[in-house]
Length: 314
Length: 126
Image 1 (cartoon, rainbow over the protein chains, first blue to last red):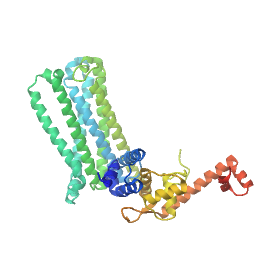
Image 2 (spheres, one colour):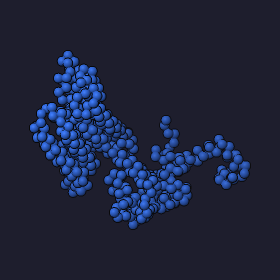
Image 3 (tube, chains in turn purple, orange):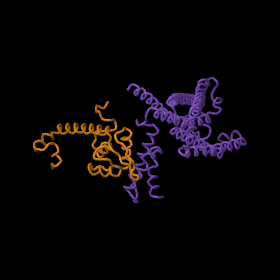
Image 4 (cartoon, rainbow over the protein chains, first blue to last red):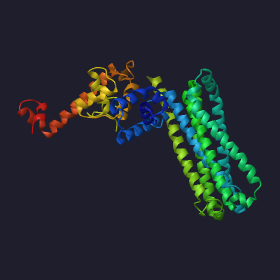
């Protein structure tokens, strides 16, 4: 590793946009200060901490360095990240909740049915909103490509495509394999299938997060009009409300099942408790993590609206 | 509680605040990162790490308190802007008010005057 590479490696914590502006100056300062000597651990930790702070600011998590439109963009992207966590959680709940109705006495099915219906409806509407938002942003993406700025987004997009292809191949493979297994083997009766299923789930999660990272990288570079950004901000806010609906619906459904069908919750892969099965605990934890991130994003969108109004007042 | 000060939100009245130190250093002329670090260490005894320095430079530039100059051999000098000068003046006034109030309440001002040289002579007292 050359001297320059060594210092560039140390500032990898900073976001790409920051490095493009200050990276060379900072690596030169590190070179001037430390030369060929080892950079002290304290300085390395400080760079990691400061770089992470800059990254969080670029994400719009905090700070007031972004102007109105960029704050809307950052807020909307935070909601998208929250949605990615929700998709993982939703898939876990959907898999875990398969055939739940047969486990609950008919007289007590109406409330969990409504709750599960809300989860499915809100999840579907949320997915629809994300697809529409992607379609709205598509012209900006094409404009980016026409402007020859592909190199700026190449890495995250290629990474996303590669993980997407791997996840697709894994999905087809596990579907074909599962087709040759009995229902009992498919639902936790065959440990090796369960293990492969978990690994397949991981490839899906990785592909999902790579896709979100690619979307965020593209969105950061895409030039969008204020009107489009406002529309995306409104859609992101609606998405957060839907996430709240999914979380509340899941908890109601879970509570009813814990009361009337605890054996159902205690069966299946990784489910070791009749009331607090690990997959559901993990799913709800992910939901609340996603909801927190999305709520911060929604607050940032609201702040961008307030900023616009205050600038108009001024 | 709302700030009573007229200072920009990121400038504090702490004399070791990186933003205040950078602005103070740039008053004597434009400097790049390395020169800023050395100057600040010399006049204040504070050794700013590279991450801290560039975190403060980023915020100061975003708010128009400093201005970047063309790069010279991979080093970019910065200079203080008129807005930065005004913000530093305000910060120093606030520090002075705080120092005066502290001296007064501790009875140091009377003591200093009695030895005949204003508050600055306190530095040479045992």
